[in-house]
Length: 170
Image (cartoon, rainbow, N blue to C red; front, top):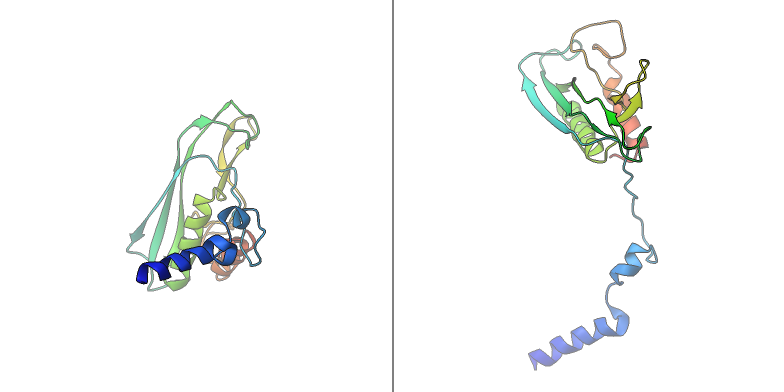
């Protein structure tokens, strides 16, 4: 009798009473909400991070997260200015305070990195195609400075979070 009930359960699905077909879900024929994941033009690269036992200006008492980005030289795709041509890679560092907000931004940056939104390939002033920052701000200088790439900057984490949210990274 248990087998017959199982069969009746399966029959309900076969009669269209179960969950929507995957093809209907993929085509958006199902009511509900979903976020479309966009992918940027960032070339293949690597993002790692380490904790430094030092603080950043404006974040006394917190350690520092140092993000390491590495891109090898490569060949441009159709998402880049000169498909089929070479581009120069890069190595760069960025810094966040090692606190709750800094770790949250790190997670969002990691998500953006794997959606290929953090870097792109562009032509520099010398006419060379190279990996460069896209439009997500980073702090690349850990010590106090006068430019926008350094600390202290009390609004940086809030600004970065808003820009990432505007790109669908939450």
